[in-house]
Length: 263
Ligand SMILES: NC(=O)c1ccc[n+]([C@@H]2O[C@H](COP(=O)([O-])OP(=O)(O)OC[C@H]3O[C@@H](n4cnc5c(N)ncnc54)[C@H](OP(=O)(O)O)[C@@H]3O)[C@@H](O)[C@H]2O)c1
Image (cartoon, rainbow, N blue to C red; front, side, top):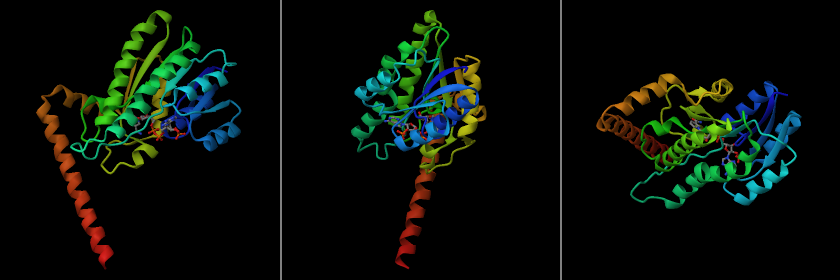
């Protein structure tokens, strides 16, 4: 056995693909998520999976989960991947509950996950934060998601400084669009979409090389980085133009649906 990895959000999308990647590379995987059925299935399919079901927004559940794995002495890689994406559809009627809920899932949870699981990561170990390339540029309707992920970026970079003396590596990951249940809900074009297997493979390779920062696909993230260097109004006009044509498309679709319903 090469080591032990704990993956949050191992029941779906990128996390599930990471689980299979690490199992195939001879790791024991502590698989986390809320979906008990899925966790049970993953553990039945592979004896190197240790399933623990808990909600990352609930500190008590995180504490109980850490207790459940007290017999496991060391976590070599703490893969903080679980997350949620929901949009603020009407900025003027700002949905504070939605905002708080996305921040709680994507950012606030990380404090408790670090409190309870980081003590098991020892010298030579690794903490990985799955953030998003959305933090490279502001997107319409992404106030909650983008803010939560921007918080992760700072957390990861600051923690890296403090864990250096402990010889614990910290990797920040900025994926572009990856086809998962999270993005299946999106109603806009997602250029250079990758599969979750492709994303997992890039993360596995980057983490194995102890890289500080991973971003992919580069043909998307490098364009985004270029826009970020230009004056603000350039990206603003591109983003707002895209949003306008998306809204027009939605209005046309709605009209067509109404017409069809009347027939
Ligand atoms: N897909 C993309 O294009 C993309 C791009 C950039 C960044 N990301 C980031 O990549 C990560 C994984 O996303 P994905 O696309 O793979 O999404 P996904 O298929 O929807 O998976 C999300 C995972 O997070 C877990 N999760 C969500 N809320 C949870 C909670 N309250 N408690 C415990 N677990 C929770 C889910 O587990 P349960 O359902 O079992 O609770 C699930 O396993 C996220 O952080 C996302 O922001 C994704």
